[in-house]
Image 1: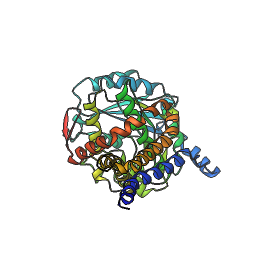
Image 2: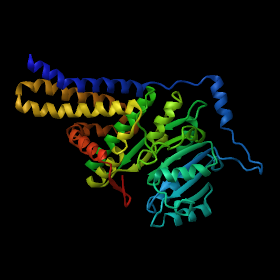
Image 3: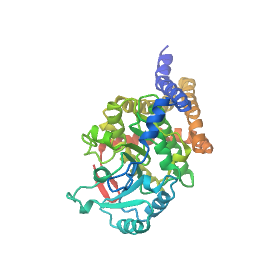
Image 4: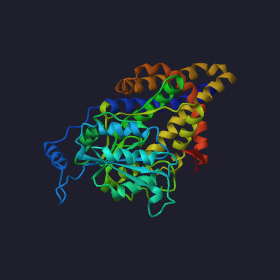
Length: 395
């Protein structure tokens, strides 16, 4: 009897996790709701370009890129933006130089001379408060001068496809306030594949949460939102002191004010690509930075999901240890591990098909074995709050 009770306790979190993954899979596979004819007309009218008093056309999208020491990566992204299928007059690009010590600013200045797209450089060091730094400060400075009603964000080390902006604009229906887009990691080797698989799971979970009306996460490398809505929720007020989280804090605030206005852009042409971290040390630094914002979440959905994932992984690790002490628990532990692994494969299969990375399924068992100590280590380091990023020691 005692063994049965202990076995059921070990299974509780994996069962709850498996049920959530089944729910996420159904949400990912659910067809999007079609717009009514009235909404289609309203959307078409809102996307018509408008002219200023001088006759120039207002951009419809303002693309913001916060950059710090990105001279090696930025030219590729700027070239991608020049190749967008959206008309060059339909969008502007604002690069915000966050106190770079390399040629980032010079590269943008030179590119602006020949760009068919309106390309502007802002330098935080030259603004009225030159001491301000960090991604939130950079984005706030750009939003203050942006001309378009919609803000689109990506990172300087990303690559975008020719239809990226057109896909975002297509997602801007009359009720939309925030659009989260897919992000894929690139690279060679086992470490890159494991990182890519983990991020695919995060992207898929974030998409499913949005589709279920309970947003949890998104990625600042690929998102868009209404400029007016950003101001309506007070921008980054309330979490400006947290170095990370410019994307998810805004998502949660916008969902609280506009619960029906959050979208996921499930379009392969909207996928943004960025390189996986080349070493384990750099990977852990990045993940600690991501984890540092979790303790500041106010919304219930991301907190509940984080607890569920951690509990499921701790239950698997705890079950393996308990089995060594009481071998009679082996069958319960095997069921728990099988249930968790099966749920992950079931959920990840359609998401990996979307990204054309189904071959990564072979890495699911490896990631499951490593995830409990990895998640615990990163979570505890994130709670401590201090980390180094781009040459800065942050808290």
